[in-house]
Length: 252
Image (cartoon, rainbow, N blue to C red):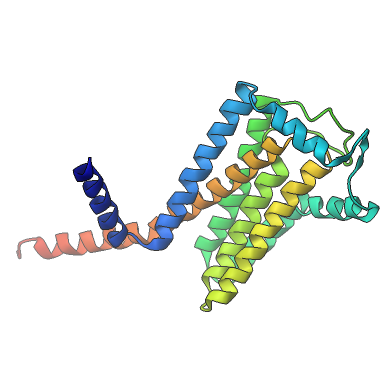
């Protein structure tokens, strides 16, 4: 058993030496997000397990004996209604067009493509899965905002994760100081969490909908980032291979 463990560690170390740390982190996010989304889909949506946890969390955010009254002061509900708007389709569309257009204007087409693929792709996936699973919205408490689609996965959470994590990662990638990178990503993660929480607080999503949305949005964005990171490397390998092949041709 110890030999097997040593071999696994040796392979992992060799892999780490040949692959950038950033690539390892991105692939880890893709794998973890994918596993979490599949697990939630299987256990909660398809097999209807752990629904008691969903119900308990939702009711814990309401006043005992009055499900129509969210806990906390009155201004909190209004504030979270504003926060939830940051994950809405209109706001995300504005951010997407604005940032993608800016990237094209400064001649960064790969960054523009990343923004478009990450955000538009995540929203398309979320919309398609809502239509496929058709999970009903929570009926335990009144909805404190208007909804039009099915519940699983949360479109606001998916869009927020894809949008703000992608934009945060792009902005952080051009910062040299670690403190600034941490600051930017902290805001991106915090905003994503706040939008997801607002959907639960307002009674329009089960907690598992939000968790699945976060997983879907973050995993898809990380996958797009990884794929686009490989394009320059593949292009460089193709150019190198062509040059080597040309040099190897016999002189005529």
